Image 1 (cartoon, rainbow, N blue to C red):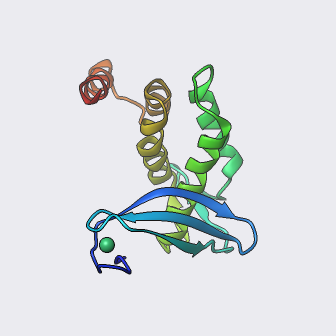
Image 2 (image 1 turned 30 degrees about the horizontal axis):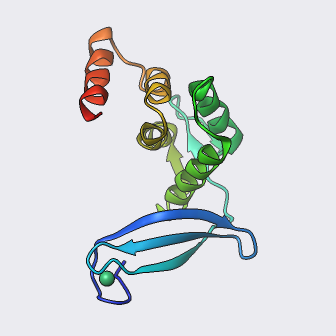
Length: 151
Ligand SMILES: [Zn+2]
């Protein structure tokens, strides 16, 4: 994507939300070169996504399933429902934009981990410990150290 003003390519998303009228994601973007802002709309594809599970079986993508995993991780944490919904919409947008019809569940887990990190550190560690299945306590501690260092 290029900035419509200066053709720069360093664009960041400052806000994204579903646009009800046209089944699209509305993104507010800012160019990091000239600082001008603009809006883009990305259509949400209606084709269903298929998730490939660890045992190679397939099932339709379910937002509810991801949501319940996220809610378990954010239990009693200062994370609002609105932030979670926005995160899920972001993830779904990435999935649809990947143009893959079948998506490994592990990839979705990685996406959630990547996003949940920005919401809440405790939720991230909880989520990661379930989905990445830390092989041992050391890899878990390594992950924790990275988070603490980033703070
Ligand atoms: Zn620009």
